[in-house]
Length: 226
Image (cartoon, rainbow, N blue to C red; front, side, top):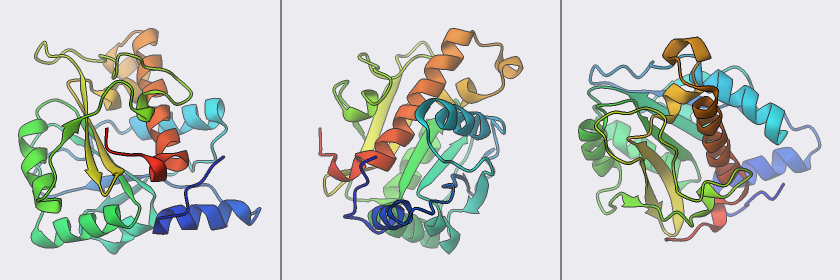
């Protein structure tokens, strides 16, 4: 596995893996203020971890952490996941902390669980006032890891009849945040009985989630602006 060493977290991963004592990496769910249901999809991340460990040979902990946006604890996790349906509110300290985390090598995945878009965009603008979300082209490496998605994100749940879109925030040539919109990957990762999705849809969602993690842990240090 190729680990990029030009970021703080990339260096940490390289040291751990090169030491021969690699402990399981732990993912984290991001808790935010504002009243939105940050805790949505409780079975999603455990299922994604199991899929990645089984199909990609990853060593991810099955214990998913929960961390607050403004906590220094976020620096303990290389990958943060944010989801929900409603209001999101970052304080100035939250935004500053999240910016420092992302600049230092961390990664944020945002999954719109329907209704998140109008709330998350202005909050991420607090984090990176100088950046805009850009739609990633279908040729972007995030769509072409172990599982090829030649047409971009799969459509897991129908919301407003719009096509699924994958947006990114790119800081100094590195993708620091990936935002799936009108797609609902997180719902697709949940237990089969929760949303009654077809096995094909669930598999597509898990495969795309695996691609995101694979991209972050192996190639993201070399990603360039599309």
